[in-house]
Length: 163
Image (cartoon, rainbow, N blue to C red):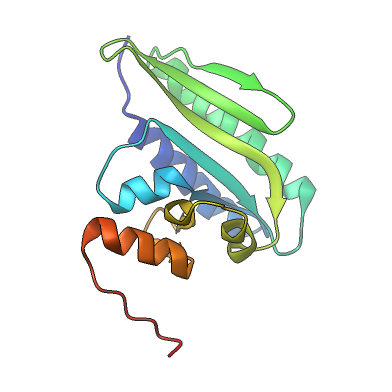
């Protein structure tokens, strides 16, 4: 079995999402602990993807989800990976068994459509998790509490442009 780093799958999912968003009003956003970990230069074994669509386009969100899952499956097959796909009412998980580390890493697709990133982040009850990565991880969006919490961890200064 050829091991494919989780980062490669995450990069592919974000690339598919960005391409899809050019013609449809829906995209996938990484938010929560994995986004915070990435900012702190730590690896996460659990990456949560959230659907964002200002138009609340459920059909487009389903199409994007199906496209992403098909591409993950095809890529895994080409590389002799055997991910496990599970679904419950709220999430679809794609799990990869990391036998070298006895760890299971997973991509999770949250089955809820958010009208904006700000609404998504407003739903997090833990400050450090109120963080999102957009556009292949090149843009960071945080709540003020999320920024404050991460500044404490990273020892950085924050400049609030609203004041």
